[in-house]
Image (tube, rainbow, N blue to C red; front, side):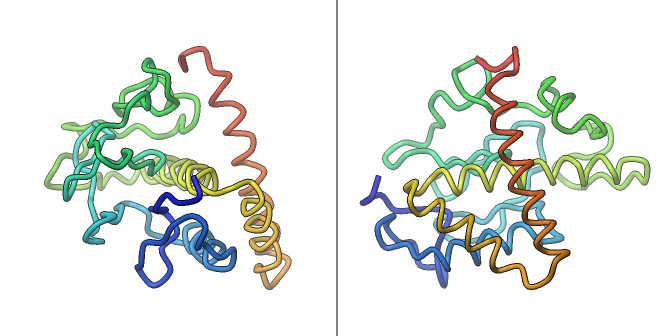
Length: 197
């Protein structure tokens, strides 16, 4: 909604309403997301502290807010519950890491809570490195889809065009184009999976 505070695009750390958003600020945020090497922690939308996931559940809570680790969606104002968000409840995100969703979208990711990671340590197994990168690469795309879906359609088009023109060499243009095409494919595929209801 135009008057809603947008939790994804926050120029200079200041939360703004959707009608106040500038396409250039949104492009800067999304390009930072796309070209980031580190994507393990999510910033709290209230205090901006990095929140690190240490359990198999993808629902993260901090400062009275609830956020999905997979796609970044934040619970609506006035509630700390992600209503109709999880697979089996009308949504498209797996609530737990063991869900078959990951067999489709990150088939090489084999990490399991209590086996190779827990709340005190990350997975350090060499044979899991490729799968971990695949898992976080998928999360980047899901965060992109959630962030871009949080703004009006006319701004979405400006943001995508801005991302394509921001890339200053052909290699970056290819990365951005591939990322956007993959995001479109994943968006379509998520909604056609038999386990998504």
